[in-house]
Amino acid sequence: MRVVFMGTPDFAVPSLKALVDAGHDVRAVVTQPDRPKGRGKKYAPPPVKEIALSLNLPVIQPVQIKDPDFIDLLRGYSPEVIVVVAYGRILPPAILLLPEHGCVNVHASLLPKYRGAAPIHRAVINGEKITGVTTMFIDEGLDTGDMILREKVPIFMEDTVGDVHDRLSAVGARLLVETMDMIGQGRAPRIPQTGESSYAPVLTGADELIIWEKPAQDIYNLIRGMNPWPGARTYLGGKMLKIWRATILDEEQLLARPGRVMGTARDGILVGTGKGLLVINELQMQGAKRMSAADFLRGTPAPLGVILSNVPEKETVCGDSGNV
Picture 1 (cartoon, rainbow, N blue to C red):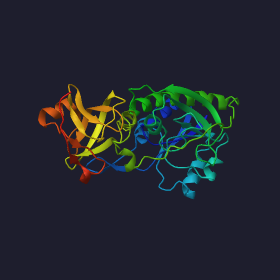
Picture 2 (picture 1 turned 135 degrees about the vertical axis):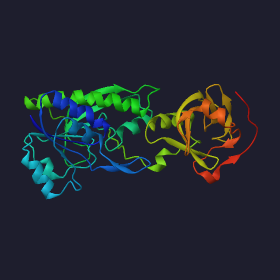
Picture 3 (picture 1 turned 120 degrees about the vertical axis):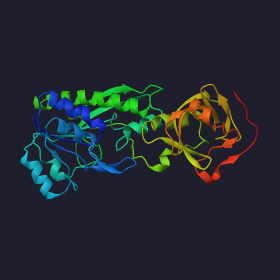
Picture 4 (picture 1 turned 45 degrees about the vertical axis):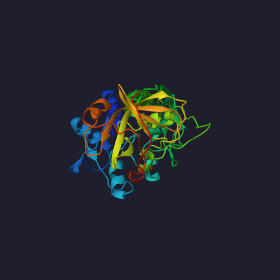
């Protein structure tokens, strides 16, 4: 079928490749404008642009998706279907009505759960054991359109959001090709979304902060739900400390001072929480590279007794500590 593909981040790349490999006529690829990236803030293309150019596909990067000139340009490609995978903008009615078979979205959740911008992060942070991918016809609501296909995907206890992202991205690409086959053959169902819905809003800086008063299990889920992006953070010695990996040592112990550095273990730094003990295994001090806790301790004395905080000025030191 004649297709216009709209997508931006790494998650969308396997879907674009799968469409091309399946023989669909991808007339153009629409993606977000290049953005400043990294410490040097140099403009870098989004991942979908890079792969589209490598496949010799025309690339369009509109600043305003409602721009009439851009919509006329889309119309000129005569798409039978517009495929949207993590594009990053809500499509206006003028685009939704443009293709003969409508606009199809690959969404990284089992709708109607986790509608919105950050379904993978929110599912891991919330400790879900099952997530999945849904393909659907896009309507004017936020991820409210009729479903076509759904497939469950497990979230294992050790998974980071990166692990789940890669798994869902591959499943989404395969499900998209099956969906396109069904649409082309006129047998794609339109299944209304039913059941309890939830919303997965875009991550904010406040979401990254570790609240040590929470149980160890919740903090563990936050840490893996922020790895590899953007990182769960706390403060140590007035500097931001990102924690990339941790393990739970005890889920029941109650402490008077959550966030207190209790001591060191063979594989990390032991910290108390609101309920239970956590071992920090991998970390990154502000201005330094990511490293194991063991390597950190070789160059830095263990901050025993320090109370880690979600604001730098509230860090305190108290009590005795010891090795575990």
